[in-house]
Length: 63
Image 1: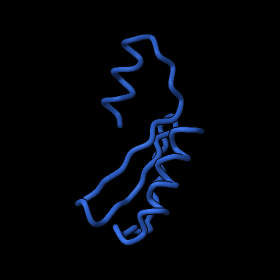
Image 2: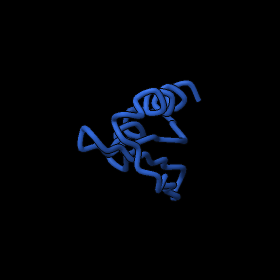
Image 3: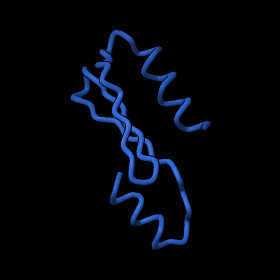
């Protein structure tokens, strides 16, 4: 996420919020980088919650 912010800054893209996901394929966790603050969703989501995972990913793209 830090690398994505640096890349975007070099390209002249001012993106204030960067979203991230960590997954093993079965377990998912989500993060958000705003300025110098990182917000970590401590909830671990599982593949059997695919509708919830897709909702989080979709909301991150839209916002």
